Amino acid sequence: MGARTFITPQPGDTLDTIAERVLPGVEGAAQQLLSWNLHIAARGGIVGLLPSDIVFTEPPPAS
Image 1 (cartoon, rainbow, N blue to C red):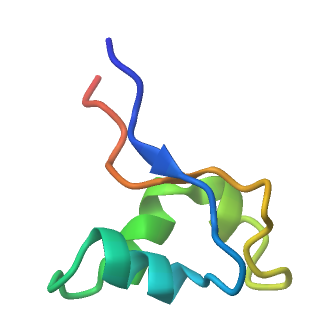
Image 2 (image 1 turned 90 degrees about the vertical axis):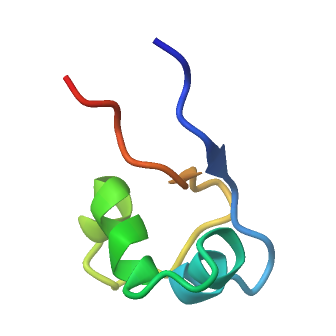
Image 3 (image 1 turned 180 degrees about the horizontal axis):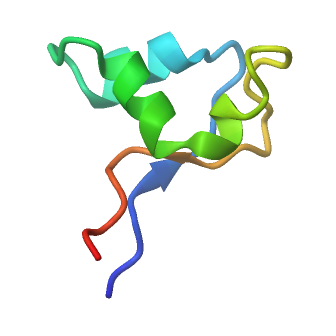
């Protein structure tokens, strides 16, 4: 099983800017990223992205 593709946020990044960059033209891309990154969703929007966050840019493997 290979590792999932991920990025770390650049200064000023939001989930929307990352979605535009890694999933251009995909409708609901930010929500899709959020569903693949439950550790970010669990913060409930209280804290934005942290420089140390890992943002997965693909879904988890099927089990």
